[in-house]
Amino acid sequence: MKKLSIVVPCYNEEETVVPFYEEVSKLNTYFEEKELEVELLYVDDGSRDGTVAEVKRLHERDTRIHLVSFSRNFGKEAAIFACLQKSTGDYVVVMDVDLQDPPALLPEMFSYIDQGYDSVATRRVSRKGEPVIRSFFARRFYRLMKKISKTEIVDGARDYRLMTRQVVDAVLAMKEYNRFTKGIFGWVGYETKWLEYENIERTKGETKWSFWSLLLYSLDGIMAFSTMPLSLSAIVGLLFCILSILLLLFVFVRALVFGDPVAGWPSLVCIISLISGVQLFCLGIVGQYMAKMYMEVKQRPLYLVKEEF
Picture 1 (spheres, rainbow, N blue to C red):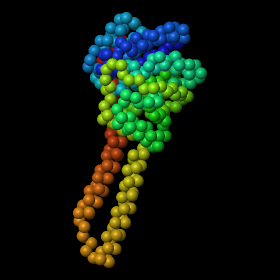
Picture 2 (picture 1 turned 45 degrees about the vertical axis):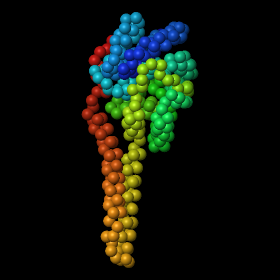
Picture 3 (picture 1 turned 180 degrees about the horizontal axis):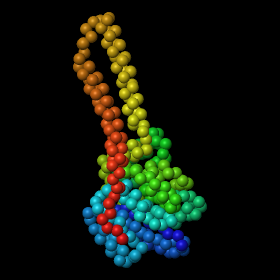
Picture 4 (picture 1 turned 60 degrees about the vertical axis):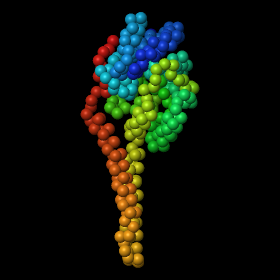
């Protein structure tokens, strides 16, 4: 009998813990027919509400339910890593607890695993219910990543993914501190089937992702799977060096022909300010990469566990 681990990262999801369990329970007959042993693992990312208490109450009803609770909030990337690390199944599926990842898709996902695929990933074909500005920038991000990175990152990709143990072990082998799971899934490769579905809005609770946090997350993704910003800063620096040489030649020739080479000091101040800004911008790009290296070198744990059962 093979085992399926359903792993769920949670952060302040008190209202959705039980509804999610009830939706998964509707598949119990399917699991029995497929002869699958099931474990449901909630990973609490330092919630400040009653998420842990709700999971404990469910555990009293169903011993298949397990909990890993962090000592504080370490972020969703750390929670997903813990989900995979603590899972024990031959198959592992990562899902969001807010029911935007419908458990009803699991039978179809398993059908592709039976056909020989190593993983089945999901992507949204629409962004119904999302703010227009967020959707616009999300699409621009995926388009940009397609151009500057060799790693496949699919537009609309969700964390909802069913994997064999081989794929899970490959993801866990990448122990980097600054994680961008969507990119990691693409980097490890393996035969992946993409399953499309319409966007489903939350039934309860509120999203924990603000526009600003998503923007920072996208920057993490760019720096994790592309060195193009470094190359871009070098190119910009080279172009400004060439431009400065041309400007020097222009000033020299103008002084020889017309004299008075110091006229136009306001424009000169503007040019100096522009070049200084470009230098600081390029230095900032290098600094961000160095900051990531600094965090990697420290080798701090991705998360700390407060409670586990």
